[in-house]
Image (cartoon, helix red, strand yellow):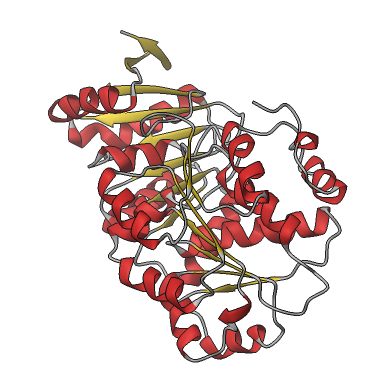
Length: 380
């Protein structure tokens, strides 16, 4: 594994830009993906949530963008508005820090399409968007897809779960055949892999940081067993016991999110809530308040498990137990970003203990039983 970004054929501007973000040592996926990306090869990359996938594809992309050309050169596709904005913010930050005139814009549904068309007339170098709106604007001939040299699909498993395969194929067919195609995800099942390979014209380089879907080893996993009616009170006591710097609280049912956020605020625990029923502006406001530290707790459905990259998140609380293994992976992966550490705590009922054993086997982790005693979290 490389110990410096200087080991790669990256410009001094990009290396300097990363250093300004205090990013000096490449993560494993960055060590694997950056050299291959610079060689313009197609990539299928699988690496745990929080492992640094965004910079693994942005660093080589920045190296290849010709900022002297006033044309669209790359499309990055992501499944949610939150992830689109996360990637976009990283592009803007890296361009500023690296002092490179690389431009970008976001293309998403539920946003004024005329405003997006106006931005496209400026010919940004990189488009970051959700697949439906991107394809719509390609069909309307508002995106000059003939100049696209790189196409990146992030969190492809999530896109395929939501039946976006036909849309992705349509975008791929509309863009030049000789483009570079890079596909990244935390989890790639055999079924997903078959669909992905059907996208590829060339033999891709397969990159994996682990033989199976895995979690960042810097995450500590634990659980408490309580009655369903005692879950919120247990959450309050947990917060008092572990004093998180910043925490995500997950629920399975969107209808309860604002109620839980309201209860936390009532108990002087500053919280905001987001769900699939939140408007784009409501989600943006809540995330901004959380990102800037105006609220310490963000209550969410699994919507936000993809796309939040905030190093200050120290704890994940599962007030409702995640229904499937992959959702546990993506929830827990919101902490311990990069080389940081974090804690994932499930507030479970007796009925959910069997699922804990399944997740332990699936991800080769230990989810340790705990109890609250005397205001402290103790091992059993």
